[in-house]
Structures are given as structure tokens and as C-alpha cells.
Length: 114
Length: 116
Image (tube, rainbow over all chains, first blue to last red; front, side):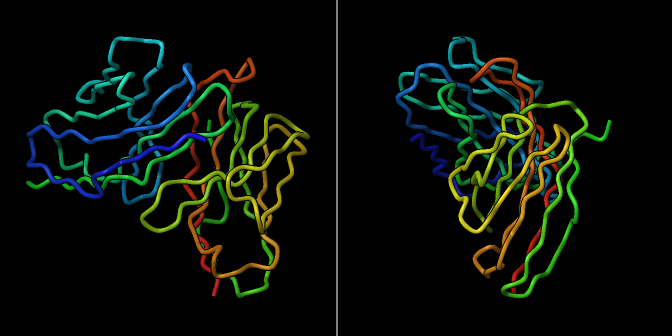
């Protein structure tokens, strides 16, 4: 079974600064996907970014980028130029081709200070 | 195109009551999922379906039942509600053309259920 660990229950960042959220995972699979989801107070789950394990290039979506270290099984999310609207819970999630489910980490609450 | 819709948004149940959470998607997705999210936690998979007529258990299926008679609908049934089922329930769907293939999971807005 896969496990996903987010070691930072809460993080805080000043508006316009950069913050990095950590995620590690454990799996024996070689073909998988990794995701970051954002959950604002509305509770809606919003896909932020995804990474295919076979791709060496780190995924980027506007102000959001990842640092994917496959050997270390690490998948961190960097948010640049943080905005007040970035304040939310962020969940790291794992999808393996051998299974049919997303495995979620426990989440990191991000606070953005004006 | 509404995406994934869930009803109701909120519900309070008494211990021992039953109810059905509704989920509908209009994207012709073959895979559908039910998750629960306990306070301060990530989501855990209850049941999923790979297509009409096919369902399977996830991590935490006890106390729940599902059916999938159409591609669009995937209701979740709670029988004999217990306080441990107090949670937020999310339905999700995705399209996959091949087994194990991956595309983005789209989530509904959630149903907040309280069992007293």
C-alpha cells in the first residue's frame, strides 16, 4: 500500500513571498502520478498541478511549480508571489497505475499574511 | 456543463437513520468515486466504480453501500447511521480509456453530514 506524508501541518507566508510545501511518499511502483490539490474554505477540491513519474522535467503551472525527486520519493510544491487567495489546505496525492484510488496526505494549511 | 454535482449540501441525521447521498456527473466519465474527509484529515476512499454495473470497495467501506445503474449517477447509501460517519463526503469522477490509465479526477462540492 502507498503512503503519503505531509510533515508540515501549517505554514505561513507573507504576501508576494515564496513558500514551499513538502510531501514524501512511499511506493514500490515505478509508474505513477503525483498531484497537489487545493481546498479553500468552500471545501471544493481544486487540482493545482500534476506530475507524471516518468517525466524528469518538473511540472509548472503559472506561479506553482514542483520539485520532484523520484529517487528520494519527494514531491514539494513551490508557490511564488503568494497571494491572499492562495490561503487554503493543500493536499498531496499519489496515484499508481496498479491501483484505482488516489492516496492523500494529511494536508498542510497555508496562511498568507498581508 | 455542470461537472460533478452532489446533493444535499448539508444533512443532520439521528443515530440509526438511513440516507442516500446523490452524485451525478455530466462528463460521460466512466470512473466514479466516493471519499470521506474527517476534520483536519485528507480524503479516504469509500467505494469506487469503473463503469455502470461495476463497483468495488476502497479503504473504508464499512457502513456504506453503492450502486451504479447508469454512467451518470453514483449514489452512496448509509444504513444505520453512526456518529463515526460524521464527515464531509466527496464524489469524484474521471475518464480513463485504458485500465490504470490516468486523467484528472474532478470533485463535487461535498456533502457535510452530521450524525447525532
